[in-house]
Every structure is written in C-alpha cells, then in structure tokens.
Length: 215
Length: 255
Image 1 (cartoon, rainbow over the protein chains, first blue to last red):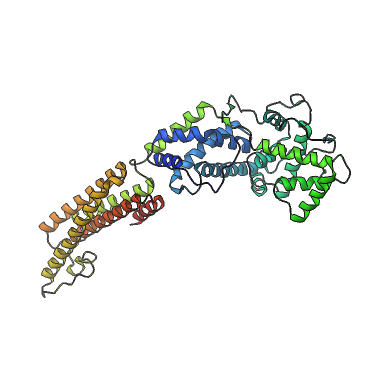
Image 2: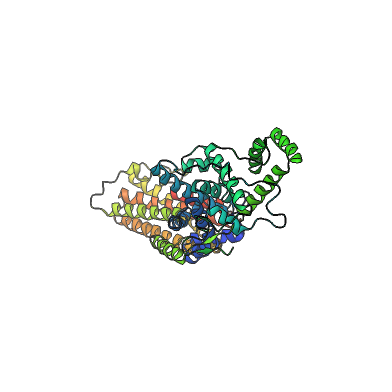
C-alpha cells in the first residue's frame, strides 16, 4: 500500500531483531527484510522512475545501501520508514541525474478546458472510487501529469522534492498535479477507461511480468 | 496556462482552493471563504468530494511484486558483500572490525619492529614513557638501569593487577555478549597476549631493548583498554542500550 509510515513511529521489537540479524550478516534475515519491504520499495522505485527495469536495478541498490548503512539505523523510526526514506532519496537522485541528461520535461501540456465534465454531483453516490478504475485512469495521463500525480498523491513526496528531481519549478509541479487531478476526474466520471489510444494498464499496472502485490 | 473550468462561472478560484485544502496548504481566511462558497455551490462540493475520494484511493493503491529474478540477483550481490567481510560480527560490525584490524596491525607492527635487526639502542629515559601508570612514585636509586627496571616492574604489576580484575568482570558478564563478538574479543586478546609474551621474552634476552619495553607496555595498555571497553559494553547491553553499545564500539574504533 502506498501509505508512508508515520515518522513518529519507533522501531518495533521485530524490526530491531531483524536489523540485528542483518548486522550479523545473516543472509536469511535480508531475505526476510526483502519479503517484508521489497514490494513496497520496488513500487516506490517504479512509480518514481516510471520504468520497470530501472526499478529492478534501484531496488537492489536500495537494499545494498541499507545493508551498508545498517549501523546508522537507531530504531528512532520504524524500519519501514527508514527504508522508505532511503528508497525515495535513491530514486530522486536517480531521476535527477537522468533528468539532467534530458534537460527538461518535454510533454506537451494539453489544453484542459474541454476535459472537465459537467459536475452535478459526486461521481458515485453509492460507492467509493474503485482502485482499478483509478489505475486505468492514471495510465491514460500524459507522462508529466502521471509522474507528478504518482510522486505526490500516491507516494507522498513534497512539491519541492518533485521539482528538484524533475528539474522543474515547485510551482510547475503544483500545476502539473492540479491538471493531473482534473484530468483524472474527467476520465473517471463515467468515461470508458479501457478505450482510446492509450494502453489501458500501461503506467500503473504491474510492470513486465510482475503482478499486483498481495498486500 | 489554462485554468480548470467549472460548471459555474466564478468557481475557478475556489477550484484552486479545493486543491490547496486537499494538500493541507490553505490559510484560515481562504479556508473560511471556501467553506462559505461550498455551502452554496453544489458543483464545487462535488469537485471537493471527488478529489478527496481520489486522494484517499491514490494513497491506498496496492504495491507491485517484483519479479523473482530481482531477489536472485540481489541475494548474489549481498552474499558477495557478506563474503568480503573479514569475519562475522555483532552490531556495529564494520566499526568493530576496524577496531580489531587496528589492534592486530598495531600489535603486529610493534612486535615486528621489536624483532627487527635495526632496532635502535635503548634510551633509558624514554623506556618507561607511557608505560608507568600515573600516580606511581618511584624512588631513584641513582642507577639509571636499575631505575628503569624498577619502573618496568611496578608498571607491569599495575597492569597485570588491572587486567586480572577486568578479566574477572568480563568472565562473569560474558553471557551478555553475542557469541560472535565474544569470539572476536578472545581472538584480539589472544593477539595481544601473544605480543605481551613475546615482548617479555625479548626483554628477558635484552633487558635494555627499548622497543621491546615500549611494545610490552603498549600491548598491556591495549589489553586494559579492550577489557575496559568490554566491561562497559556488557553494562550497556544489560540495560538494553543499543545506542550506548554502538557508541562504545565507535570509541573502540578510534582507540
């Protein structure tokens, strides 16, 4: 789940035990750590980089970095929080360096004036928004909108972090998010999410042959 | 840049405020304006409800499961890193390993120097430097060689007594320590003991060998320091103080 653990939560006893086993060099302990957090960190990497191949490399680098930095884990935050921060920083560094080579984002910014459906009430009176529908709608966003939405609303990054990583102004990140949400709302208001020229599950669907996580 | 259009003219400003409120980035004044507007505008209420729903759902999207190959590759890389470690160890592994390496290098180097053919001639006035425990008063006999012997004997006695006391404490609290840590400590103590034995033998053969004397007291000092830190470590482990333990290991690496 894309919920960031509270910074105020301290490490639990199982967290500390796991870290201690890892510090002793117990490979089985690392496997346990990977089973617990691998999916979460891989998903973070995938959503931030937008690439399954990059996410696969990054999640390995993140765990190796965690191993090398275990001495700095003091248990003041939950292990998941500590790993999540490590992952976000690694992914942002990666995107920043990649973005630097690309100079700037090149997505055309589309005119949204015609996209907003007439609003007379919430999209569903009877049920909350379905996650699969949201995933399909996200997949249809232009890449720059999608990136801003995933980084901010799904992974909980701040606009200044997104701006720095993508080489754009903080205000631009806000603007992209505003447009992304507006477009998503339009797509979700009873339109055919599986139609159109965009792949229905191109962005948020499990990358490669991966599957949706069980958690 | 385009603005979101809304069903009702004049709602544009409030649409932006709805996004701001969603992100917790709205001031009190603007918040009150928005509330007043929402009370009378169904379209903006619908927008606010939809965006809140979307935000909640976005924060609960399921994670993906990486392909099995990812763990296969990662475990290989981790195994490589683990194999590269000199020896398994407890918390603060690399710090402790650095400490162990420092001790071994220092002791080995001093023994090598001591045995070396180019050892300089003894300098009696410097022989006891750093070797005599503070506070020990030695009456001069007027004979420099005899004075040095006396310094050495008293210093050796002090260290030996201190070591015996510390060893007793360590023995009683050893169960508090991780077996891997205990094994490494024993190994380091063994290296130091070997240096002490060899230094004593060298002094016996050449009583004025300054390097042998320096080497002996350096090894004794290291043994006392290592035992003292071990006792401190046992104490913090008894309290379950991980941070304190890490601090001690950090200090060991600098000793």
